[in-house]
Amino acid sequence: MEVLVNNKLYAVQPETTVAALLQFIQLPSAKGIAIAINNQVIPKTHWEQQLLQSQDKVMIIRATQGG
Image (cartoon, rainbow, N blue to C red; front, side, top):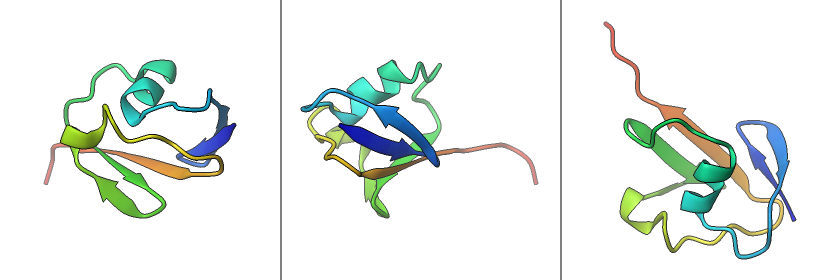
């Protein structure tokens, strides 16, 4: 199945969780990031259980320092 991650298309296996997706795309660290699926923020405590659906739009936002 295909999901869109930050406007880039990825083919993932059915039953893929948010946590598995982060490993698949080789995100170096889960610290300081937020995940939204179809404009709904997913709490970090749900990443291990939250299953992706075909055509989901995933947005990964990384916090940055500065000001």
